[in-house]
Amino acid sequence: MNLIAMSVTPRSSRAVVLVKALPQPSRTYGETVCCAGVTVEGQWKRLFPVRFRHLQGDSSFSRWDWVKFSYRPPTRDKRCESCHVYEDSITIDGHLPPDERTRLLSPLITGSAKEAMALGRTLTLIRPRNTKFVAKRKSAADLAEERAAFKLAARQTSIFDKELAELQPSPFDFRFEFDDDDGRHNYQNGDWETHAMFWRWCAEYGEAGTLSRMRAVYDDDYPRKGMVFALGNQAKRPQTWQLLGVIRLDEVTQPDLFS
Image (tube, rainbow, N blue to C red; front, side):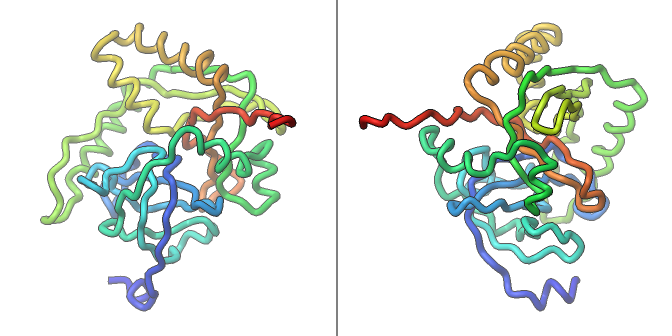
């Protein structure tokens, strides 16, 4: 048991969930998900480790859910937004309605990851421009390696955990090409909801039909209605930023001067 963790008084917080990144195999925790949200005061909170598929009932949250949780400062992760979450403390505490989302999140939008880093942030939202959704088929070797990693992670559970089916990685590397204030980028898409969309639609439309529909969503529908990317940097390589979430968010409209 970690003696440092035992000596720290747990803190509590409440945040609306914006990010559920792809599950990652972990030698310590099995299968974990990095999640992130924002408090009502507009402060980022990075929640880790969360074994999301083990959560049940009032703990199994979705994007836009408000969650309450207890946490302590991480021992190795020095990023200011990071929280080592006590998994059994997570509870859903409401849902952020669509008409309140832009007001809460607009102040968190920066022009680029570079600007966010200059402001001392390790999480940010950006409005990407000229986006292009890319789906590149993974090699058989890469896919086999991913399956093996998730198979091993599924076995790393305690006697108190329910047994989970092995997570099936998607056969495509989903990416976005886009512009921001720092230039043109090509980021791997680490948003779990994108991969869930792929598997959900594949059962109904087949692989080719699914990819066509996903391009329509990400290249047309979302950009036309308003879209932001949630970006976060890596703890060990803070100069390296990742695309963690693809979020539908209305643009800020000019207030009516006569209202």
